[in-house]
Image (cartoon, rainbow, N blue to C red; front, side):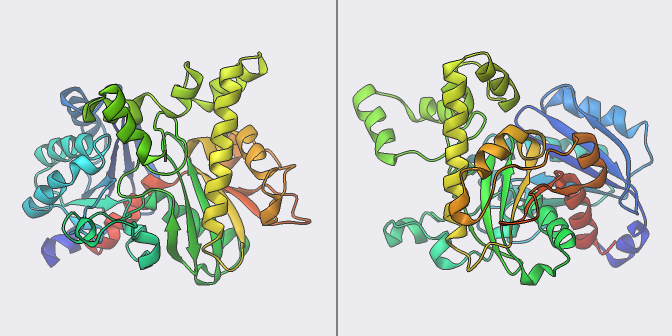
Length: 380
């Protein structure tokens, strides 16, 4: 983008498009960061969602720039960047590393660029937050050929959410980001944990793809790679069957048989549903193990921070995780803020603040972070 165009856009609105496998979140931000309008598309990304975006644009001030959430940057893009033909092609090449996310996001990118061809479009990546992972944290114990020729390595995800949560945590604790050692936990449809040392990600539970790590809503999280080989050899499952099952029919849904939503499972457990109880117990144990493994990459634990839809709106899950983490100095008996207050204020400290590690909840801020990163890329 030319310097002139950047100058013209400096005080304009930013449109943020966050596309998932079955959803499209549309938000327009003013120059001061305030939400002007927002909408959740009623249809998954595709022709219908493009039509909804067109209708949205017809009802709001024209944006000066568009920020797109792209989950996976691949090996060649290490920063948030303006989308041009080269970047669009590079993203298409890595779509199979996060098929639930990148493919629909690119459909939205194409639709938005078609509707707004004269406006700069910026790709904001979840992987950028983790781009400087130490070698020991990003490296898998596989032959050098797999690492060098195939590019097998850990990328890490949820970086936009973590960037937002880290800044809010520093504000809440009254400490500079570069003097904090914290574990951040994003719990939503996808779930991960991240160790941050002095403002930088030094370890995370997700890997080459967003399938590794914690148990998730419909994704399995980590499991024995030998189990996959066994399922292929002994039971004849194809790569396609494994892919579909591990991404869409596992996790909390696979365990409970009824739902991938923790709110449903908490209610079902209270009514005596043993499968729901097992699902929640497996999930919270997975979270505790993930948090503990992240703490192993820190010298101390200044705070444990929850974000994401489950993290901000499921006190039962937070309590069950924290009450069994006394080995890390984390305590149960957490406060339960009203969700309306949390969303208005943006964060809450929920530990008793008398003993133990501070525990905070930060309202999910991915869209705000995308708007901020878009302005930063364009010099707005």
